[in-house]
Each structure stands twice: as structure tokens, then as C-alpha cells.
Image (cartoon, rainbow, N blue to C red):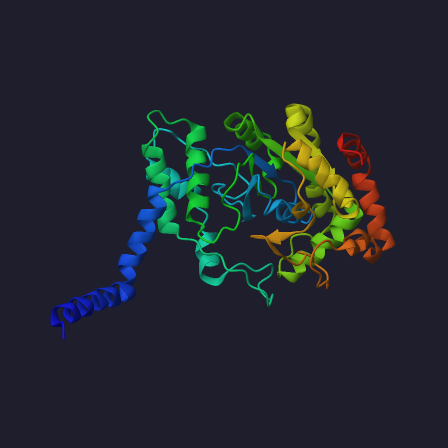
Length: 349
């Protein structure tokens, strides 16, 4: 019997057994591989923004999975001190400070619990994300740049975000844009001036929803999450006015880099709208643009009403049927003029 051979075999088995159970070494090896193969994400941002309950989540999920897009998988929350305020980066500060400013704390919860459309949903999508790895990628990427500009800081953040998202099903391919949705960000002129200064090659998409359909949805959603934000119809409609007027201003100020889409077209003329937006973003049309997904898996609609459908919910076009005559009169009084102006700036299908 070859005892030397048996001894070597036993040693190899012991080494493999030790490596199999050495979780720390495995994690360190994972970090090393990711840091040795950083894929820079330097594409401009195609930002979706307007008031909530207008189809921003839907459009973001329609972009998800397109091979020429890096699609941020949920609301982009790099804003500071609120998500709807574009972060102000001081280049005199340290890279560690920039990361803490931009870091989206929501990834901690999502990486622990997965992603759900609603807290009560019975469907959970795994979201494998390592925040500590994200910071390491962010810092290493910036160390490779001799003279850092504002754009480099945001490129470093996007590089680190998508680099730390381990189960991203759409990480490869030649990308044209990073798509992201942040409600209300577009409602501030200062936000948009800064955004387009950093991303002169960016695109901006705002969705305008008929106020007769928007108000019931907004009211129902806030009650559903136990908030009383829209209980006063006039206060609610002033926020809708602000969002709609800002869409007009952004279109006038930034021209062809901005487009306004009607929510009713997004739901009722989906194919035409997504073909148009593919041209707007200079990407090829792909059938995946017609199905809302999370990380390429079909996802239910984010609706305030009792719909339980995957994909586009056409009943969202009939929310006005729940309004009283007095509510309709107030909506017409407060929104007719600005809505008409917005429709003149919106894409016609």
C-alpha cells in the first residue's frame, strides 16, 4: 500500500474541507475578484422624474433588462438631504465623504429582505448586494483618476453600485444610458441645472398623468401607506400643478434632451411609446421594453387599487370614475390651463 500517496490524498482532502468552510476567505476572494475586474459605468443618466403616481416606476421597470441599458432597479436615492434634492458634491472633500453622501441606505434593507412592490406582497425578488464592496469599488475607481471632476464622482458611484450588485442579470453588453427614476427631482430648476451641467449628454423623461386619474390614485396610495398627504384636494392639485409646470420649463430650457410623455399613452399605446423612447435614447427596440420587470423577471403593477396583474394595468385609465362631481369641478378649475399647455409640449402618438 502506498502510504505516502494516501497521506497526500488525506492532506488535500483536509485542505479542501478547510477551504469549503472558510467563509471569511471565500468573501475575501469574492472581493478580490470584483475589485480586480471593475467594469466602469460612465454612460450618461436617462432620468425619469415627475410627481409620484404618474408612471415613473412603470417606465423604469419597462427599461429594466434592455441589453443597452444599465437600469437602476428601484428608486434612485442619491439625493441629499432628501432624495428629490440633487446632491451637491464639494471636490475639496474626501472620496469617503462623497460615498457617504451618495450611498443609498435602502440597499441594506433590500439586500437583507429582497425587493417587494409593496410590504404586504407575497412575491420577493432576491437582491444580492454588498454595500462594503460598493465602497471599496468606489474608492478604487477614483484612485485611478488623476484629476477628478464632478462627473467622475457620479461615474464612480454608478460603477460601484452596479459592481456590488452581484445577481444583476443585465450587467454585460454595450450600454448607452443608465436609466433611473426619482420622483420630484425634476420639479426644481436648481436640480435640473446641476444635473445637466454634470451630464450634458443626459436625457430627461417626464410623465404627465391626467389629473382626473392622478388624484384618485395619489389619494388612495397615501391612505394605503397610512399617510395623509393628499387628503386636501386643492393642496394635492397644487403639487400636481408644480410638477406639470416644471415639465414645461425643463422642455423649454433643455430642448431635445427632454421629452414629455402622457401616462395615458404609456398605458394605452405602449408599443408606440416604447419605440419612440428607444429612438430618444438611441437604443435598438427590444421586445423586453413591453414588459415591466425587476432584474428581468416580470413584476406586478404598482397600483393603489386592488389589481393583481402582471404587466400593464389598463384600469388605471379609469380612476376618474371614482370621483364625485364636486371633485371633478375642482380639478377642472385648478388644472385645465396648465394641463392644456403641457399637452402641447408632450409627444403625440
